[in-house]
Every structure is written in structure tokens, then in C-alpha cells.
Image (cartoon, rainbow, N blue to C red):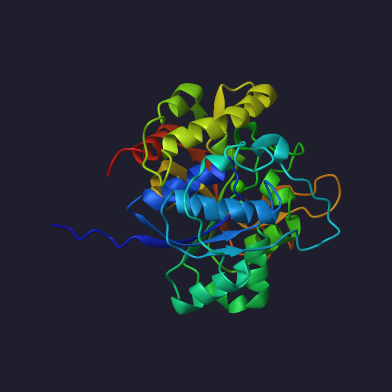
Length: 330
Ligand SMILES: [Ca+2]
């Protein structure tokens, strides 16, 4: 019999966030992955709220892992910032944070970037970073200890938009929310010499969790104190209304969960290789651009940056099936 591969150890960098909650549930319950730590960042709400949500979700999903609070704002503090309370509600969880009735773990004493450096240095080559919020914590970790780039197994980022299938920005015509929340950090993370896979709107907008799909989660998925499927159904009601009014879809996009599915089943995605830079100035601030042309020898701002991988196609039925299966009793 073939020996099962050891689960992939993961640090989850997150700004919960309703789709973050969905992603974390899948990460915590899939046998191919092993959640090692949760690091929080501003984004869908302020960092105090997203950190509290990280603690609440760790408790709900029965995960005894450190939760470390990260950046309260982007690298450049004068940058404009706006929280997505119109999308995720004031509490970041669609008004349902109060539904979670579980004992909440204390925050780790370290800042998120320090925890990332410590864990990566303790197990060189092992840790996968999955980042589904603004990339500030990863950028701070790289600044603090550039040596970690060579020791991280892989970085998987939910963010950006590259225009395939006309998938462009969701905050501006060219910028996606996680990237425009800290374009300087994103540019640093994509330009660093570590392997990055970018799961952007090009693929996340291809996968819609419809109202009937979400409804079918009810009564399924054991949580501490409350059924996870019931919690997600309630938490997505307002979130779904937002997408209905903006994009006319009867459901929600599988944004952050898609990054977890990539870690589980990369074959569900089509990748394109090439260096990626982020526009940091002007009206296109936050735009992600990959140079996937054949090398011409011309010197450009992409020259010398490592080739990263951008997801340009997905099999949505695999994303939906893998997420749904996490709600079946194991
Ligand atoms: Ca997120």
C-alpha cells in the first residue's frame, strides 16, 4: 500500500472576513493540510476585529494553534485605507460573531511577522504560507528576516486580477481589494525570491457558491457550540445580498477558499509563469501585472524578478466539491 504523504504544514495569514472563515474551516479539516498558526491583518475590518475573529474561529473550529496579531495598516501609513464593512458587516462576520459560543484562546505574545519568521526558521523548507488578506505581514516578515524567503516551501496568495476572462479589479477597474489595501507590500512579496502562486479574481470569480449550495451546508460540519454549516449560512446572508446587488449573482464567490483548494488539489487550476509587479502609483494603483512574454532582452521593471505562478483557469466543480466534502462527517 502507498504511504499517505504527510500533511502540508500551513500558516494562515488572514483578515476574517466571511470567506476567510470558509477557507479556514476547509484548511482546518482537510487531511492533506495541517494548520500550524493563524496570523491576522487589517483588511475586511480593523486588526482588532479581525484578530478577535481569528480567535473566535480557532475556537469554533477546535484548533489549538497560536493566533498572532499582525499589521494594523499598510507599510506606507499615509496610504488611503477603507475597511470593507459594507461587504462583511461591522463585526467582519456578517453580524454573526456573537453566534460563536466557544472558549476563546489568548493571542500569541508575538507580532504576526515575528511568528512567521520563527516558525519558518524552525523548519526550513517545510512551511507553506497561505495569505488571504493584505500582504503586509508577509512583507514585514521579509523585511525583518530576508533569509526566510529561501526557507518557505511555498506562498499561496488570494489576491490580484490579471484580466483573463475579463476578470479585472473589484475595488477599482484594475485593483483587487487585498492588493489595493497594501500595494507596496504586495509588490515586495511578489518580487521576493520565493515561489508564489497567485489565486486572483481570474479564477475566484469563476466559482460561485449559490444560495442553494450554501443552504445545503446547514446542519452539517461540527463546530464547538454551534454547527459550522448553520453559522456560514447565517453569516453569508448579508454577504450574498452584497454580491447580488453588485454583480447580480445569486450566491458568493469562493475567494479565499480557492487558495486552500489550490493547496489541496493544484491540478484543479491552470498556471501561467512570469514575474509579477504591482502598480503603486497613479490611477492604476493596486493593479497586478505579470510579464508572461518570451524574454526579449529588454530591461523592464519586471527584469530580475523571479517567475511566479498566476492561476488563469480553474475547474469550479472541484472547488465546490472539495469545500462541500469538508462538511461530511470524517
Ligand atoms: Ca480575506
